[in-house]
Length: 177
Image (cartoon, rainbow, N blue to C red; front, side, top):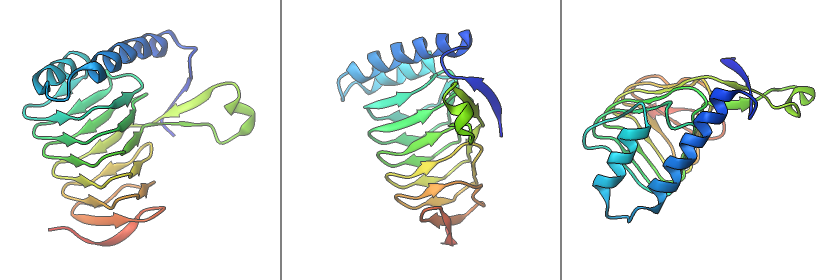
């Protein structure tokens, strides 16, 4: 599933973690009202940070450089993006507080986990998606256009456009409009 890497051993991974740490230290130290400064830092470190988008602090990420955010996106407080590969967020997406987007995971075998064997698989969030508070989106998931992810959901599989999912694991419960 996705690309294999060894946490902390690849130079690119280590370099990007240093970059992400510099970003998080600077970003999370800014005053809450300094929206322009926050956006400037996001544009400097992320692959893309769209117009009229907002990221609330505190915020944590693994690499920063693998995050691409469209226009008019709102990401609420205390989100975590484990971006060991690409996390792509479309336009007009709403992300509630305490949401985790985890594009990384550990090997299923206990024999490999101790050696730092990990995998990374991209997350794609299409336009007009709403992710409720405390949701977790796992590696390799695509959230289709206009879908809604209920608060506290754990999304392990792709979500169809204009559907509503909730639960652990997330299952379809309706359609959005």
